[in-house]
Length: 511
Ligand SMILES: [Zn+2]
Image 1 (cartoon, helix red, strand yellow):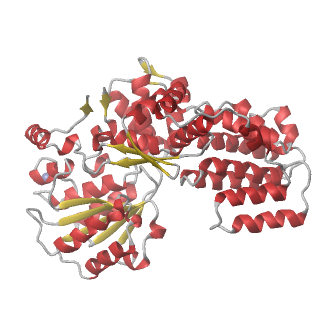
Image 2: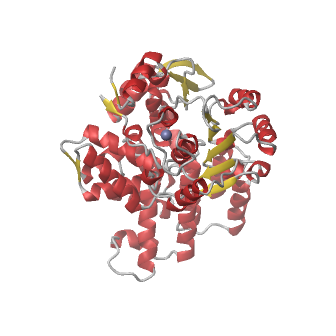
Image 3: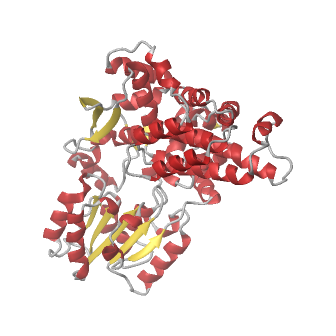
């Protein structure tokens, strides 16, 4: 049994939106004084309310009583937008197929009047992913938009949108949500769900979601399933899989000692225990932050003398520089470009920076030049650093001795299950379609979109790919694909009728 909390508690008017007060106020004023633009960009990190605000805005404009800052949520127009069935509010996902088909039909249909509402509104999510061709089509419409057309764009990467588009839009930057804002929402949901939760547990949820309410709610959802009666701090720690402090210290100590093999092995051991690489880097950052705070003379810092002794000769600039590397690589790993190799490069870079023996200036200069060539494949970047830092890649030699087996999906699933049963359950909802050039394609029906997105999380992908690597000795890539032809339960006409009849929404799905 599985409750879609994010859907159940999606805000239906501006007052319910979590945080983003300034944006919401400006939009409400604009509606009130009828100063509504043709196109808006809502930019900001994932899960902070971009499309939620766009949908409420659409409702405010098309509500029978509108345009009105507080839509009624009762009229046909409002309920259809809530159920994503309005013919006049068209949602396009720029990330799937890069919007080619949708934009083509947009261009063809833009001259048709709205079916029954005041405005025809296009909400385009992740708009920066559109192709140039699609952008050109959009631009044509934006240059001379019919009065009844509105565009609401949402994006996590506004810098990738052509300036010609941006200059024709009103732009709002949404911020990561603050601790109190997320806390309030989590508490509110717990209350409605009759679930008790420790205060410390909520703090930890916030630490994990880093200001993304969507991530926070989906973690809460798993916690409700896995915890008994009350959600405790330890439940959160267990579910997230934070690496313990000692292992983190050992990675860092080995870096200072220039023990590449040891530090990377501790790193891989944590990953094979199901720890999230991003959380490992977070753990490293926390230790480094404590170190810096201590070096600044702050007392009562949580740091052991033993750990401190490793870093006593390092100056603070170098420690800062290293922490910047970690932050940079966290971002690169998030973007999922060969994450495991990224971790190896990071450790090498830190050894180069912090390692006890000093490296000749010339060599370090060379590494710098090499790593700045961004287009260079990651593997070559790694090799170059290996060569210049002068460390033998012993790890690979150790791995060659292992007994690898033939690729066997069922056996691999069993290995995943040992580590993370929930992940294995999510994988099973996908169908192994084909393996091509070391890419494993898994097809998910629309109703399993949640499971697909679970596998897409960098941490989970890395875990699976590491298990396959350990099993076969080869590095495969997991590519989850949504089956566009499958029907989502929500699109089933029968279900639709029922939802409309009861003016309800789906909050729970069972097999
Ligand atoms: Zn209404």
